[in-house]
Image (cartoon, rainbow, N blue to C red):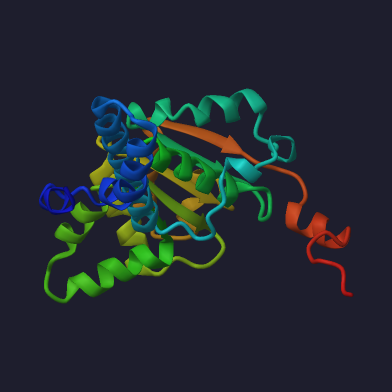
Length: 245
């Protein structure tokens, strides 16, 4: 049986088999029940393995999810939060822009949405603007930029984090335009920014910004966060660190 499961590439069932067969023999299980248990373990194990692979491929920065998300701390209206968590907008290949001051939960919310998308079987890719610029820069040497962008678009949801904190180099501006243009009506983009997209022409050439924002916002949900930084508020209340012993 072990050899047969090796040939069939059933590692999860094979790992469980010795213990399960011993239990089945002592308790006189029906053969069909034994087979059912082994197949269920293989299916479950493959699902766990695929989930781990999707998570690793996504490149999330911290691993935050809705398990630790407090919706009351966000200024995004609760009905909007709930609607976005259904991920219907990803199915419709629509975009999401979350903009507002630093520390108001933009990155946390987008990562939690990305984690949920991964758990539901979707491919997700997480980038900073700097990382996208690096892709264009490294692939311009051999004129393979289009292939690199096509690889980015293998994901169902592309998340681009923290636009507006720093000046945007030419490579990064080009990369952002290329990704938004290539994804238009084909993939979903979720973007966080300290600026509303209407102000992106202050970060990059106006012509490029106008063309990019036009495509980005055509099928987009825009959420504006506000208020004081949650991180700073927690730090001032002594909640940012554990007490010294």
